[in-house]
Image (cartoon, rainbow, N blue to C red):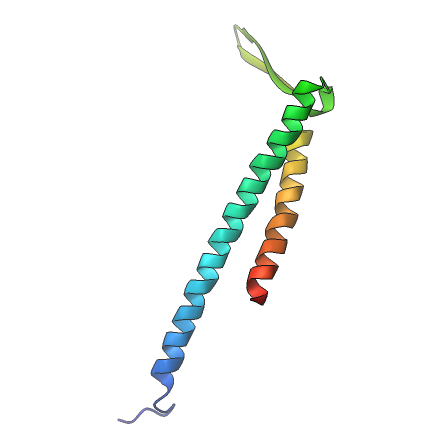
Length: 99
């Protein structure tokens, strides 16, 4: 029985598969770039907090107690890192999509 869509369906199918592979690669790269941005930005803020003794940017562990251990410090560097990684990841994804 002849195909009602014509002979070009194989080409379209292969083109669609190639596009899906490219989209997957771009998403993986976007996640990696976002993760690296989070690690770098958070590390910089934690380093600045520890070097200049800024409590809002400092994260430190305290002593162990009989009930476990106590951790203290700020999560602000991690929140800033999350925000920066979101914007950096979106910018990277948009630039990759445009090319």
